[in-house]
Length: 222
Image (cartoon, rainbow, N blue to C red; front, side, top):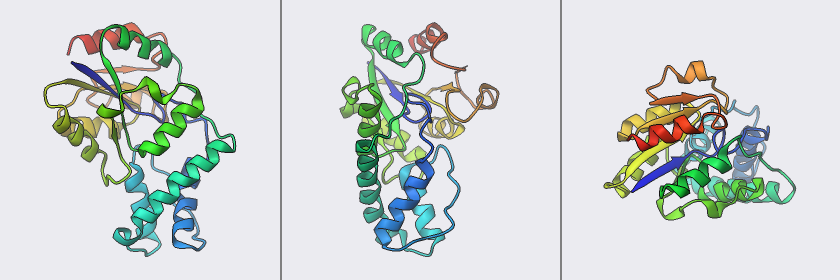
């Protein structure tokens, strides 16, 4: 069986919502019960777990003690923002890509630094729909300190399946390499095709739209 492990932000969905970094900061503030400033800059490709740990430790909080509260706060805040109208846009060509994968008998699943709750909120809010993905074969980064923890978990859980990761950052590539999973890079996030060509990706495309045949051919050849 072939399973495609899709990243969410910058890959399935465009990073059109500008409050992502601020969301983590506010979530930690809510968890610890006081204002913290100034906020840390957002680093793309880090897991939710990693970002929350960075913020907590930067402001002198014990991450082991406060991490669960910060995760719960982040999930709740993401749901709040979605209900208030925050929405992400589906990246070009994604609907057709999912349809073509389904038609070939491949499994569409998720491998993301977000929590399962945040992933579902984003996918449903965009109109793409969480039901398009196999959640029993999906992997999330709410507690992961590094993205490679997620990829290794995927490889261990699905040892006999052909896996491929589709993502938009060099961190996706690093994590894929750590688990021995092929990586396809798409430049619909903050990194250009030129920057992504310096990774170990088996294929780099500017968008899925217009390059779907090459993506499907690369996956079929695994």
